[in-house]
Amino acid sequence: MAFLLASCATPQERAERQAQMRQTVEQGIASRHLHIDIRSMNTLRYGARAVSPDFFLELRGDTLRSYLPYLGQAHLAPMASPSIGLNFEVPMLHYAASRVKANRSLLEIEAKTQEDYYCFSIEVYDTGEANIRVRMQNRDPISFDGWVTER
Image (cartoon, rainbow, N blue to C red; front, side, top):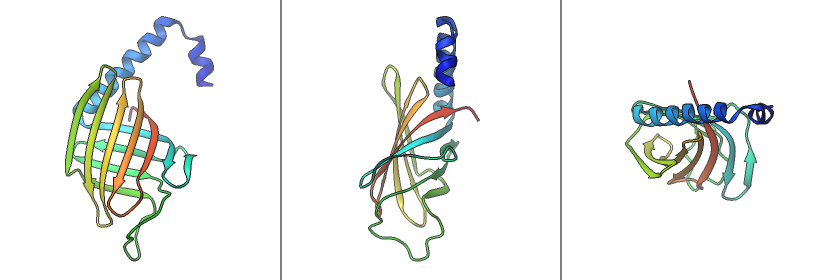
């Protein structure tokens, strides 16, 4: 349906939507308030998978809120782990944002929970598209594709 609506839009309307999304992305990165809805995950051992629309990654100032699925192998798992997936809300240990190309920004985030140490590398395009790569000490890496949304 979105494709149908996009194809009916005039070039001016598309340009206005693109400008609005670019502004949303730039403001979200500058203020550290960014919400990314996840649409698929790419696993090391099991290939690409579509995911339900419930999953997200969110920046709220100095806090990282992660509600992401995980499919992979744990090299060292804590006994009686309280969560399934990458589900946590913690302060960020490190945050760096840079503009790597004219249409793309790169966010580097580090966070630590009781279960693991996480390194997030997030590419955010001016179109609102986002690619998230997650490296962990005790699990296989995983990546996600999604879209920036206004919340």
